[in-house]
Image (tube, rainbow, N blue to C red; front, side, top):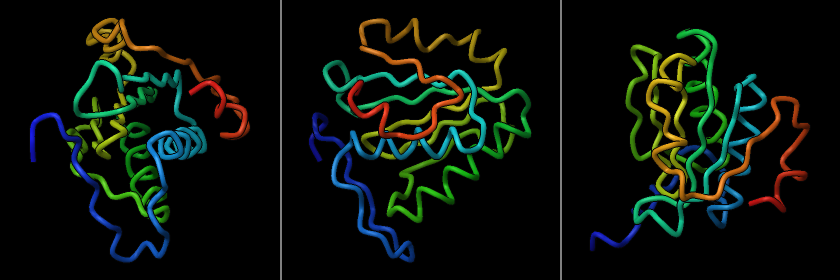
Length: 146
């Protein structure tokens, strides 16, 4: 694979669902899944134009290491049903900063103090972003913003 190519996702073995067609639809499903488990301060960053490895970053917070771990587990379980398998997951054991790599969508789940410390939003300041209200009802109202 050339360095400018984005990795392809492995097919889900027992998910039973075909993979979602594009990265926009995939990130919308990730948003909906994260919100269903009370993810806080969710921000979506469109890094497609400034990154060679992903189209979107989804950044969210949990109020405790237990909630961060639960968010990760919930995302993995529910995204698998949609045919999405992670290429890798880092930080799951400690629950302070978990990175979930879905190829075109990279999910960062932070314990709130670490999110402020690392401040990924500042590091990727050139990326268009959208804050998602914690009470968002569904992905339909977000679709036009991405």
